[in-house]
Length: 78
Image (tube, rainbow, N blue to C red; front, side, top):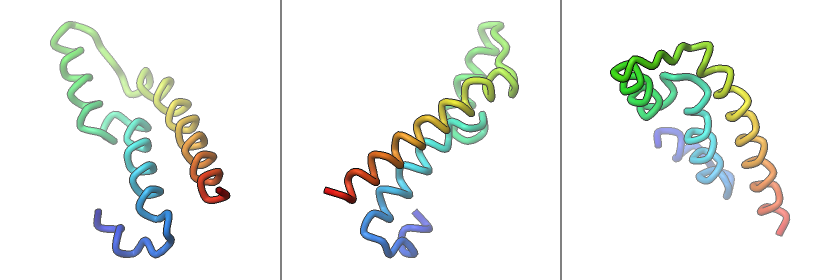
């Protein structure tokens, strides 16, 4: 939200929204939802470590960001 005034490109808003939303999956502390899930799992005696999360979070984040970039690129073409 703080960067939105600096986004002068017509696609600046969607790009900021997509990047900030999807990048939250990269690290546990990237999203409050990630922290809640890890805490709830701990209450159920399931341990999710940084390494466990990174093993899934990094590839997922990269894949979704690449998909979003392709979608934005195609949207700009048409």
